[in-house]
Amino acid sequence: MLIEKPGVSSSPLLAGAAQTDITPPLGTILGVDYYSHYARHIHDPLYAKAIVFRQGDVELAVVVVDICIMPSNYMGAIKGHIYEKTGIPPERTLLACNHNHAAGNVAGLLASAVDIDYKEKLAALIVAAVTKAQAALRHAKIAFGKADVPDFVICRRYLMADGYEARNPVTHQNDQVKTNPFGGEDQIIKSVAEPDPELSFLLVKGLDDKWIGALGNYGLHYVGDWPEDSVTGDYFGEFAARLTENLDAEDDFVAMMSNGTSGDVNLWSFQAPDRFPAGDYAKTKLVGGTLAQKVAEAIEGLTWRENATLAAEWAELEIAHRKPSEAELAKARESFIENDFKNLDYGGDSVQRIYDREQVLLGDYPDTKNLAVQVLRIGDVRIGALPGEFFAETGLALKQEISPENYFSINLANSYGGYIPPAHELDRGGYETWRARSSCMERDAEAKIRQKVIELAKKLEPKNA
Image (cartoon, rainbow, N blue to C red):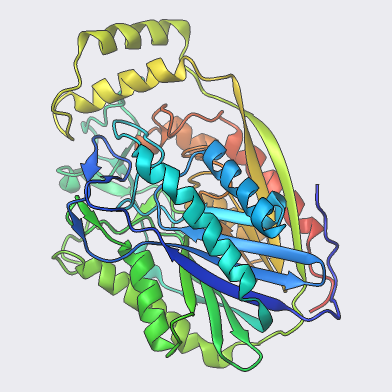
């Protein structure tokens, strides 16, 4: 394990940023869904983006990829290649998906399929972004800021009126909550949790005041207001484009938006359907543009640091899988064999067929899985890298425990454990909890990971400003 002790260093800070175009070609399988989508339109390009930091012999890389999900072994292999090319160890590389559903599919969860050709070429493009960023290293300074942007974050898990049937395709019982209750808007009682409204951002400049890069973080799922067979950067890409314009930055500036703790949060306003503009890409433009503007407005009041300390902490936790019992597996296997998989969609019994198959696949899973937990320190900011889709409750608890002012969490980083809700949310049910390859870690996984992040973060607690 690599451990860098906190403290102010006299060594100068260096930083470099780069991006590589990873736009999938027409025909590529897109997203992760109940059925496969194919790229028929390319609206705007996708990227793998990297910022590399160096101070003395400590080097960190933050890499954010325009993609929905990457499997653990795939991310591990990429980080190994980054080490071979750059010398930056896996423990000091934060590799994350931003959860863009309008991107190539390398995970193949639920009823979607992996695009093998795209998966094979993507890895090298991600590595290239890091090598280019390292080659661009120069003397730098950083600033950290936050802004409250509550308008776009809505808890998508709802308590419903008596009599509403929130059917669970795994337990075959009714859940206590319903995720995204399309058609049941008039039966909503209330959302069950509060989102995190904070936009966090780390800005990087050269000592000549030329922009190098920006890392944003916001607890919002993808917006998804585009034709389903389109390739687009969603609000993550819109943020990057608008921030580049707002800062009047040059072409080598790299802005990236990471996925905050948003496993239970999206933009779909079921209780106020006219709250946001309609039409393709309208909400994408609104969200991305607003977030970029918030960053630009905050710059004047920021404090810039030239000798920001770099450090990293890393751990791997062995977490048990939630697997079907023998009786559950036998029932699912019988149902799976009896049903074909033609014409899958969101209606009819498609969801049941998909989750029967998920139980059969989970039956062959190992009993445990290793999930990576990481905390980076850049100056007096600490960044927690979480191995899956965590709820806003987890991010808010971590922020409160570690530092309400100088901490944020990045979802879907370094390894993939699917949805990892707090235990009490598992009891409530809802889509995010339905046992599948995308939600199968043990009941106490969230608590164990949250505690480990706190432990690692405390080791990196700043001693000096």
